[in-house]
Length: 612
Image (cartoon, rainbow, N blue to C red; front, side, top):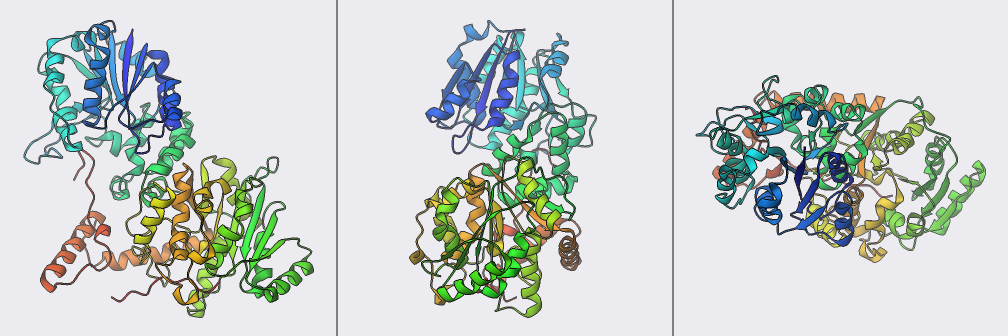
């Protein structure tokens, strides 16, 4: 069968990721003409990448969504040329696939000569249209993949459909005027259609979103990207396990690092981390760090409190092999004490005095050790510092410190497992302990006063990842392990010590706190994903408090999370309207997000870091 395929590509930065090339590369053997229409501007490098898997790469203005992209691309080819083909496929970049190949899909649909058009998946009938509650929505093929055969695409009905297509101004328009209309329009005119994976066998009218695991098991060759970057409350409501879904994709042969790389730079970080389960609870038994291909490791520690030198080096000595050590401190006296401790241990180190302690451990790392980070001599950098939290009570300070040190380097086996993650995942750029929340008001609030300046800095640095609304997915406390090359947006920012506050100005909104939150976003912008790491003991402590906190709050609210959020939003609006009181917390944290098509239905203590 002679086929032509029109593939809609869109990326906010015009970056062609490998998952696109993977899909088109596997489509290529089945298709004579691959026409890529890009609604994004393309530079020469990204155009060349598409050209490796396409016959034509055509760039257009981003108007009319995918609907008008298909319409105008087909006009570019012309009706006479299209009539030479047996089948025309309209597909887009909104899915990951194929999980194996497209061979079985085409074989099964080629065995149906009775069909005039077909799709991979179907949306079942719903009583309420997602964009017009007064209407029902009939079952229809989903437009991430629509294949039409010659009897249909050479017909007057086809020309009428596309000639009369109004301009698409929104996603709602796209669904109302095309996706939910296409199937019925042609069925009513006597054309026959089918879905390779119809909705009927599943528990939902929208199985590609609600039952992706079952669809993978049944052989569906695609998974929607939206399954991973959408509001986690949607997946929570459907009990979708994104971590399990990715594991299944991998067993089917899909190179999942392509998935991580694309989603890392395009998704809201905390939504992505939640949907994919990017929290690693690691044991103290080495699971298989490959000593045959050891990572070149440098540890950089800012030691303001010399009495913590042994404690820090003890942690670093858990690493599965030797490492280089760079230590920064603030003056000659402290350097002497640190040097004596190192000599006593027989540990060599590059011991440096910072140009200034303005910016503390953050400036020491990114300014005074910039040469180490940019030198290209290491696969991994470990960032630690002497953390004491003197402004907190002893219990709080001690648990916070344990949270940082133990979750990063808890034991020899644990440290090997942390480094093993970087061996397992080429797209992994950074790991750090989870958000610390016990006795702290960080959950839902941890941007504090830093978000406005963080947005300005992100724009200046070229960080393009969408911001989390209220609680950034960041390395709080500034303890992390990373690939040095993923930090270049920070190291190349041109920061000087004078940009950071002195001790009188150290607090929320200062550059130190802003950069602390931005580092993970800089890593994600390079297409490297991030993960949180947690010991079993601290996982038990953190989960227990989190669960009880949810119980205590949830017991005063309706049962389900979306109902709780709606109730809180109502209370906040009532409070503001009746008492004239502004927002407490963030409105963004409680406004429910739109659901995908066909879905069922006190005083704040600021988060402060102590002197380092």
